[in-house]
Length: 141
Image 1 (cartoon, one colour):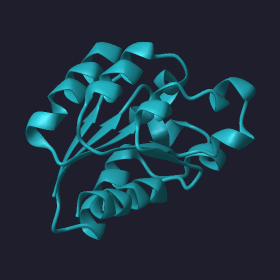
Image 2: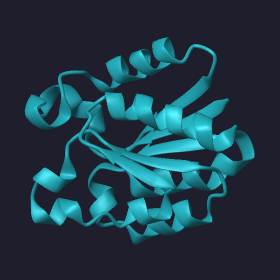
Image 3: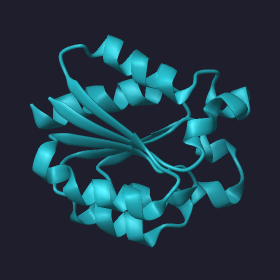
């Protein structure tokens, strides 16, 4: 299985963000944990603070990947353009959020992008990525 894992703005700075929301692992450490947990899968990891770069990756995903995991970060609450790109993308998609959005500020509970994915995981920190891969396995097999 070949999975694209996209991470949006500020996720490159996880080690500088509050542990109580985001956990203590850096993005590189999360990527290593994913590879160790699922050694038989191929992954491409991509992080960008730029909306258009994330959209370009989503638009090309169906050509090269069997599934997509996205943590759009703050774009989850604001980006109709990412929502539309996800809607068009024909591979199974899972949205992941490290923090429990239901327990956060009201504006974080409005997730535009999640409605264009098959489902979303929120609040399990880095384990959310592992859960998303497991779910993609079940959806694709």
